Amino acid sequence: MKRLFDLALSIPAFFLLSFLMLIIAVLVRMRIGSPVLFRQVRPGLHGEPFVICKFRTMTQGIPGTLYLIPEVALKDK
Figure 1 (spheres, rainbow, N blue to C red):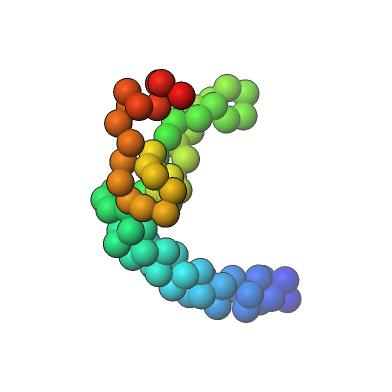
Figure 2: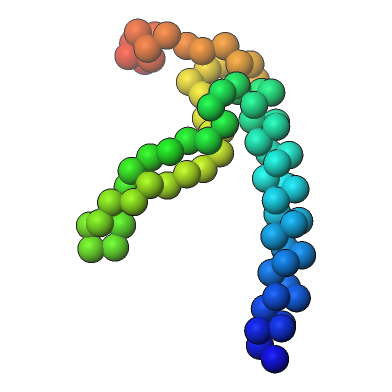
């Protein structure tokens, strides 16, 4: 019975979340550009490294625009 309950919740959630992640990926691609995903190695349980993968959402830019600020300008602040 638990298996049936798990499947009844997880299958619709998978399709709903897949659609949402596709929309987010398209928006990130249109607003920020490529690559859409950000990958980084982080320490995990007992110091074992693992790779985290998430949508890229941050830029070094002027708020409200997509223009990037040169690294030199950031050091002056």
